[in-house]
Image (tube, rainbow, N blue to C red; front, top):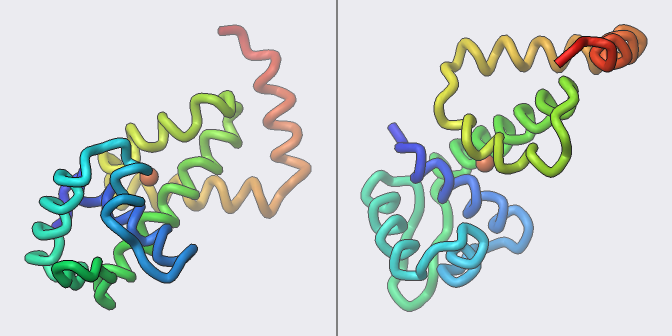
Length: 139
Ligand code: FE2
């Protein structure tokens, strides 16, 4: 099982891989705002856990397993962003809040949120009613 911070690294590596075909230590470090040495350490840990190949001096790429998990993590992140946006969370809070909660939800909760988001996306009129009604709920 991947730990929360392993999930963060994998998600980032996956997104870089999809975008550029590869991921480099420097890019991952820059995007996660950490030292390159922390990235190298985590990559070795992930390598040990079979999510990616680490080739000294050449960089690294994801295994089949790493790609699968990375894709799942990226989808979960996107789903939670959609969810927070749906319930009216302000744009400036969305990314940070998703980063804060994404690792701590059970599969069950993620599945329920997925159904809710899907329901609203398939029923735009109800979505609009809901979002309008939210504006009148007192804080
Ligand atoms: Fe994330």
